[in-house]
Image 1 (cartoon, rainbow, N blue to C red):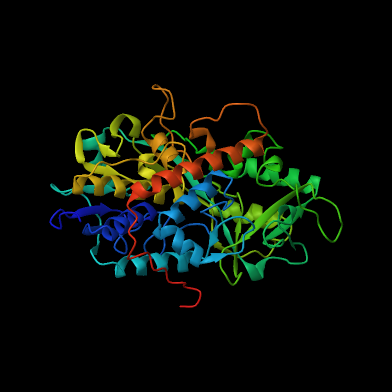
Image 2 (image 1 turned 90 degrees about the horizontal axis):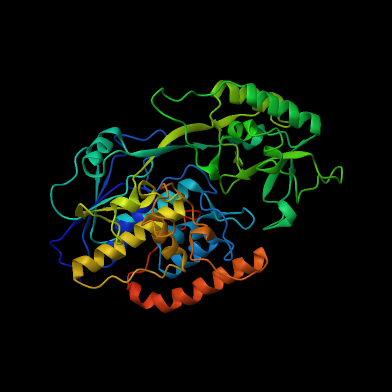
Length: 457
């Protein structure tokens, strides 16, 4: 049991902060969770709940032989707050782990506030506490005031641009044009809506996207985008066929009314259990809101009467130069009482952020109890994320950039084999090494996460 007087302050109520606070409290460490909502919100956030998502499919593939699916499995084995809430509030999405966003966040908020030892304090943090352990889990949209405060400790901040896709009202989509089908019949076989395009329709759409008015960044900000979440207009500028081989690719889809594969498709993914809203898959954008409505309704078949529940938008993400600033336990080298968790440390994605928060909880609990912290093996998904943040996955002069969990940051498996075989080999190695390490993680045998299934609440 940790010293009850050694209370930890966790700043940020996103997925990293809530996971970290919960895992510390489960291990007997009292936590004050500081969250600026509802008094202030970032540009991407709308609700007052903790662990807010901007997209139902933010947790991505649940295939255990994908890197992200492997991370899901590891977090489940560790009793993760976030994965438990996701499993309790998932919606159909093929082999993806998609959730009903509001119910997911409500479940995490309720579970966390029921946990003994957690105190939630609302309001913006402008200055770091002067003593005691502090976990900075403020995410990619850290407030300006706290950013200035952090710069006293970490120096110049790094950034890149991220964007989110529009959401449509279901009853405004022309179902005479759309057809329900998953690629190659995955999942339930009909988890997605597809808006087919002919060749002429596709190239007219591309021309409009390229010519459309975009949101212009401030003069002092150089646009830098995360490769895994490029705006559609950036992809279009790389070549007219880029989108047709990317988010608009028709492979694995066949229009049941014609029996042929469309030239291109716009896929829509269910945002809520009732299917009342649908996300435009891969359509993150920096087009102005007026241009989005004009182009999408006039040049995408089936959206002529579309009602936009949320427009696509863009925002700046902030992260620190972790490999040069953080120790192997994710504490700041120059001030070891400060820890960094989640996207501000340079992991990309909600699940990755939760995993990072879990890692900080393990490391900090070990320090507070005087125990040796044994990090997860680098061959596991959890260990690979730690390897990326601390710089071990890259050469010494490699510029730190945010990354999702990918097999490219795992220690390589040598030998010639097919792609599917190599994925299976990474997964098998990780599962074996996680099983050997799991007893060292100190997962409590009592007080397991109690996740409210908000679908029946």
